[in-house]
Image (cartoon, rainbow, N blue to C red; front, side, top):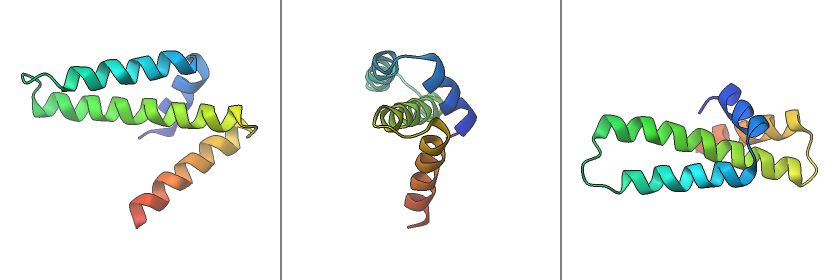
Length: 82
């Protein structure tokens, strides 16, 4: 996950577009011919898209953009440390 990419996606796309992109990529991974290296790339894309969705939802709930992004990353780092 990369915060600059998450912010870019969140700022430049509507929530519905982000969710649709996630759905398409997840569907793509279900095909049997998808290779491991492709799965790694798609996993990174999906992670960034999901991050953008979460940040946007925090903003929609009233959080400042910067606080939402930083809060999201703290939550991610906290879950990795556990």
